[in-house]
Amino acid sequence: QKTNFGFPHKYGWSTSGRTDKGVHACAQVCSVKLEVGDATEDAARERINEHLPDDIVVLDIKKTTRNFCAKTQRCKVRYQYMIPSYLFFANAKQLFADAGIEPKERRKSEPLTPEEMQAIRLKVKDYRVTPAQLELLRSALALYVGTNPYHNFTRGMQPGDKAAHRYVLEFT
Image (cartoon, rainbow, N blue to C red; front, side):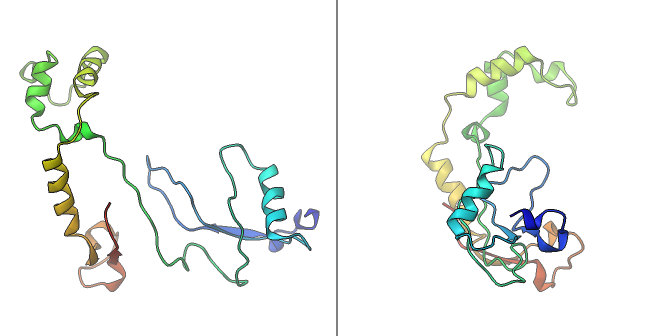
């Protein structure tokens, strides 16, 4: 509504998560404080979407308590990681040799040329993880299901700090 404009105390928002550099977020929950007058939740959603860029869409609106904060009052977070199959290629040295790249002829810090990258891409583009590799990955990930301390991944947390514990429901 126009009554929101120019009155910052009438509106505000918070997101449910954050992303690290190079990480993309999808389906974020956002808490928003807005005056919508007598508009229904669907009408407010449609009106907001009219003003958003094409790659951002409000899917649903739910009325909450006045002090609800999506970041601090969420009950669970879902992460999805995409791993290309070629990362499970069993023998990297053989892959490079098959692509005509001799690792002994270069320093470790020397990047691959565009031609070498293309040769590698052609070798791995059709590679798919084997059932045995997938089962090994799943058995390793199963070790993380349940409540575990992640203090090593949290700045300033000590090993016994309960705030560093996370509960993992599943890996699929």
